[in-house]
Length: 197
Ligand code: GTP
Ligand code: MG
View 1 (cartoon, helix red, strand yellow):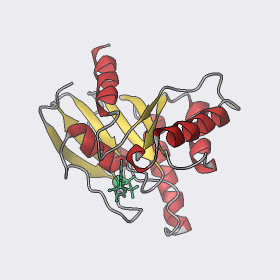
View 2 (cartoon, rainbow, N blue to C red):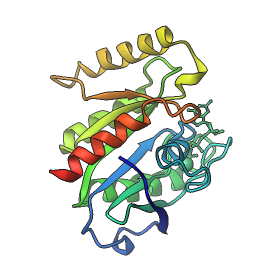
View 3 (tube, rainbow, N blue to C red):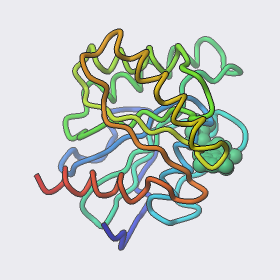
C-alpha cells in the first residue's frame, strides 16, 4: 500500500471525544519505549508524525492519525512505565481498556513486544486480557536491527511457546525495525487486506 497522506487528527483521554467510528482503525499498544510511535512513523514514512522519545512514557494520550483519508492508525500510551504513580497507572488501565473494549471500528490491535527480551509477564498478561475479551490482535516484535536474526527468532519462539499455555494457536507475528523498515510493508499489506474486506 502506498501512503499518500498521513495526518494527525486528535489526542484524547476520553473515549467519548474520539473521532466518529466510521472508518477502520488499527491500534498500537505495548510497553513504554517498545517503539510504538517510531513504528507508526516508519509505516507512514513520516519521521515526525508521532512523537517519539528515548524516555519511556512519551505518549500519554490516544492519538489518531488519518491515513490516505480512509483509515486510522492509533498510537496509544505504553504500559509498564515504572516511574508513573499508581493513580496514573490505574487511570491508564481504565481509559485504555475502555478504548480497546468498546471501540467498534477497531479492526486489529497490534501488540508490540521488544524482540531483544525473553518473554515478559506484562506482555503475556496483556495478550491474555485481549484473548479473554475476544479482541483480535497480532504481535509485532520490535527493534530487530539491535540483535541478530537468530536471537530475535529465539525470543519470538519463546514468546509464542509461552502464549500456547492460554491460546490454541498463536496469532500472526511480524519482526520489525523502525530503523530499517523491516516488516513495515507486510503490516501495510495486512491492513490493506482487512480494509478491502
Ligand atoms: P511510549 O510512547 O513512551 O510508550 O514509547 P513508544 O513505545 O512510543 O516508543 P518510541 O517510539 O518513542 O521509541 C522509544 C525509543 O526506542 C526511541 O529512542 C526510539 O528511537 C527507539 N526505537 C524505536 N523503535 C526502534 C527500532 O526499531 N530500532 C532502534 N534501534 N530503535 C528504536
Ligand atoms: Mg509513544
